[in-house]
Image 1 (tube, one colour):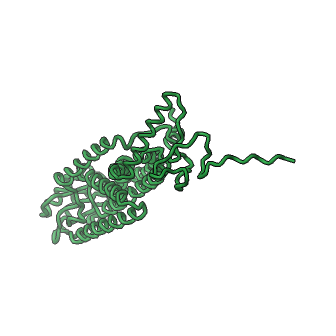
Image 2: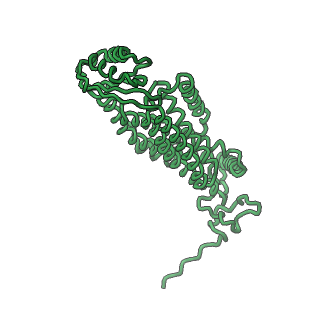
Image 3: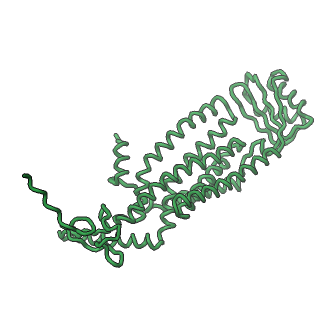
Length: 384
């Protein structure tokens, strides 16, 4: 039986490691396939916008005892009232049928009467509402405006917090990655997009950003330590950060998805279409995709963006050179020299006497003390 606590501890300490950075081309390829499928769904199949965006009439028939053949009954009733166009019929709750059609205008009363007759209920059990497309257009414009403002603010805050625009760009790409795939899944499966779905799309960006910032914070900590001690390359330090935050990311995602999955189950089986179902569906898809991008896309992309920086290249060369020297020394049985630049205590970080003039670490005798002057220890005073 797998001991998940031990696995998490091994990932954090580096005893075990998953190569997220070295396999970045695999993750990019998977994301590229998902994005292509999403774009095909969006631009070829098209999005299924709800009546709030397209406008039309909605009828709700309550108290339906027998819902068998409800789609045919609804279409027959709407056609008999002289209303043309597509008719979308769904079951809401246990005994309510929702019928959406083109704007009924002055034929609303005739459609209500025909629906009551088809479903065998009183005319008072049929409610009708007319929705104009202008309201949906206003919601879409506000959502797009809010998305643009959100992305601009997030980019600026991340650039200031992490003190590098490359982290901000990596986080922004991860956010757009999540949004495109989520909307594409809606298009491919024909899920209806409602104002509640739009709210869900904006909400998942916050979840995705939260995961990405947590991983990036650990990346910054590890890479700063790598530059100081010179014991690890930049990519290795970043990979260690992803491994250290992996269990936390999975736990957070699972804890968030479980209650949303419960709401989805109740919505699909009992409540039917509605605000709660639309919102929970968008959140479920978006949080799952956001967890993937935080682990497999954001950090590998950051490493690729910084790979050619002079400081990163110099660090990689230093670690490769002295790592080879230590390996050769170990193979020949010769004790390897201690390098101040790679000492865990960072003895030469202050640029003291043990630092070389050109900035490269200078070999120190293995019996020398760590410190700026390498003074011998004082003998303890004799007891009287």
